[in-house]
Length: 348
Ligand SMILES: [Zn+2]
Image (cartoon, rainbow, N blue to C red; front, side, top):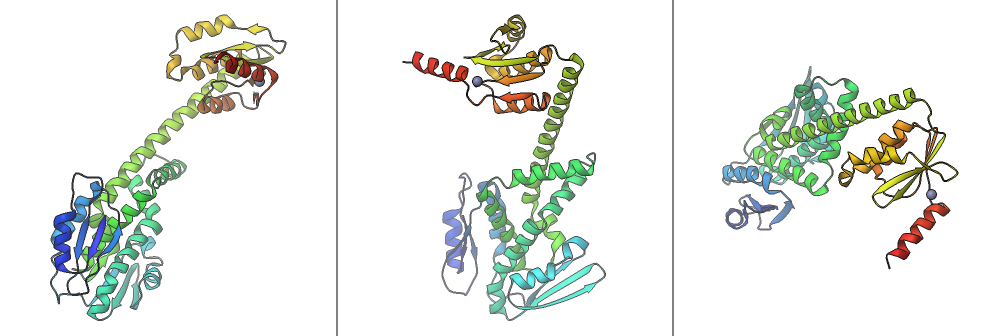
């Protein structure tokens, strides 16, 4: 957890007692001399991120009286500077002035030392939110572009969506990331009167950048796997089309760890073919779906009814894609019901 202590004493006590590098969560304190004595909890920081915050604590060592007289926030980035002044003025109360020259934007906050002391944390949080909420996608886009320029615009969009899902699957992690960003910006603000927004990403948020890079790598892997799957489905569809219809209507029934085919009158079909394919497959590792799909591709039926049994969700989706519009899933017929009752009865 990240704590803010309001006296140097508390800060150093916090530092000594709460840093625990080997644990999942660590406590970190920031000292703000000469202003009351309450300790505020700021949020969670996972251990991997704690190290950074720890070094910022070490470097802090601010003495009473060396407060900054105001902050100037600048940006030369056309996208990032758009709306920055308005956002800051809305998020941080105080005397704001904004000036713009070409693409260069400058926002200045002035006030007396006590006021600014109080505003350092809100200011740090606002900037963290600006970068991690409003401009997160731009940042990811930029990182993706630099490292994987081989993908076209559509693919980049898909990969970015995957990356965003990966980064935001855990709310605690979102809060930690935001807290870490706010902490490093806060530490910077108490020493420095000028902050270049683009520089925050590059120089202060290297851990978050590493996390983003990793999410992009994972997103690229997911995208490539999906692409491979789509190619596989496409190939199977072609095989089905080339084969032409060899059977009118196949009913697929499951029996323990295998399946069998019947025609509409209840006659068994293609037992030999199924046995042959089952012989060479590893059914234990979810290979049953693959066996079923390859048997059906070989027979290329006009209609397929899948009765209830052990077919994984992925297998169902693949079947639907390969046999577009020809697959029906039985939601419970007398055969399925009888098989179910039979199994229940046998288990007693
Ligand atoms: Zn059925």
